Image (cartoon, rainbow, N blue to C red; front, side, top):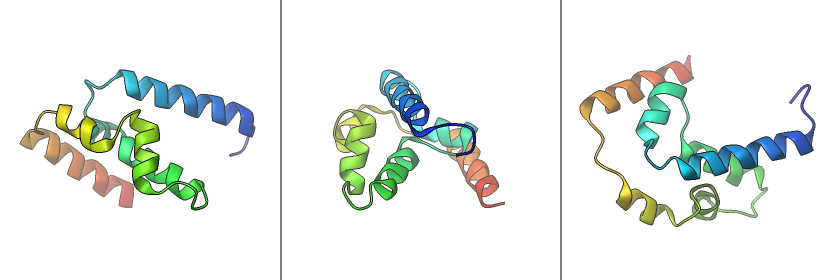
Length: 95
């Protein structure tokens, strides 16, 4: 990444993960709907960037701070409006 050294990027990443852990009130469907990525995306990028050291589940636990299944149980069902907004956002990612 141009202009950001690895140490700075790593510190910013750790801050982002900590922030997302604190904000359990923000569902992944909302993150996807408004930003085009969610905690699962972030965990996938961590897994891919680990060079095989972390599988998807281990990366998700690192991002969520708990097993994904536990986090998922805490979340309410997504509304149709949320799902529609997410679908539109995902389509923008492909453009």
